[in-house]
Amino acid sequence: MFKRILVLAPHTDDGELGCGGAVARFLEEGREVFQAAFSAAARSLPKSCPPDTLVREWKAATSAIGIPAGNLVRYDFPVREFPAYRQEILENIIVLRRELKPDLVLLPALEDIHQDHQTIALEGIRAFKQISILGYELPWNNLYFRNNSFIILQEPHLQKKAAALACYHSQAHRPYCGETFLLSLARTRGSQIDAEFAELYSLIRLVVS
Ligand SMILES: [Zn+2]
Image (spheres, helix red, strand yellow):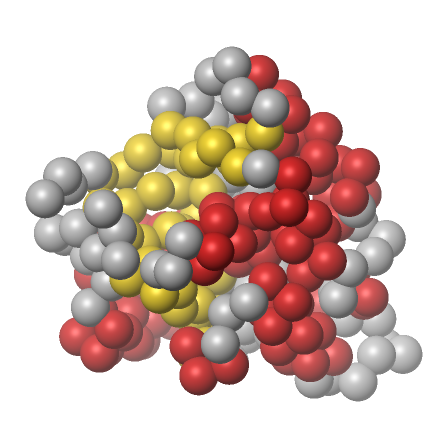
């Protein structure tokens, strides 16, 4: 199952935060992984940081996790304003669908309350009507979450996720970027299914071929 996986990341760090462990596992298993990021959130950076800071950090992070540079796609929508660009974002995702032909899409969960994340979730579901979709967990953005899908991980997958997140120096102040947090969360999710580690996903659609 699942040979070509596409990660939709509203902002450059969301892919690593939400599904970095699963991506590390998929790559280890020889599956093809693509990631599209829709904003490098230049306006959210401290004034002391160059505007391309998150682009550079994203390239380093995705490289650390093992995604080939040629499998990355980046757009430049203004952070916090995605709802105003909904149609343009949908059209871009439809192009991704045609060009990449994924059989699994990982995107923000419908339970995510960030307006940019909601836009990517809804437009992603609109664009991909025929294939499996999982919504990844970003607990700080979720009012509630359906605990209905898990991807079991091993410690090396989480070490790769931690190494990727360590590339985001501009986000190091955020408590959820640290290794302690991500290991604790992965242990918590693993405990729900009697595994040592897991990432939690909210199932949007499952297609078994
Ligand atoms: Zn985000």
